[in-house]
Image (cartoon, rainbow, N blue to C red; front, side, top):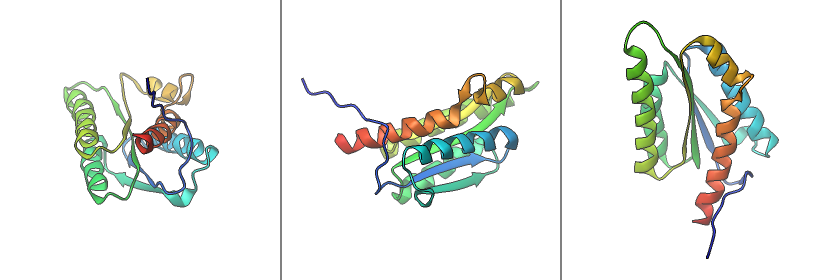
Length: 154
């Protein structure tokens, strides 16, 4: 039996795109910092990373689709934060963003990592953006490196 498994390592010929919403900037900026730190710690040069800012989580999949069509990047890391409010807006935005990101991944064959937090309250977001539950930006950066490595094997 042949087993394929990616490892967390940089590939010098690979560019990465981080698409980040400007909404909830304190949380999102912490996620970006976590992703950038993890990538740098694993040998990815800052010059190999493109940061693309969009207004909110709703716009992330559209930007991801455009990045995927350009075929310049080995992976897309999406970061944002949607906090439940008093209306159904939360469900529409969070679910639409996740579904859109999955569609981009499946249609393009490009790893698209979902680091868009969908939380009940800001404290939950803080816990996942460098707090008690780690940093989701860091987690998706490591997953992106692993998926890039796996894609090169397959």
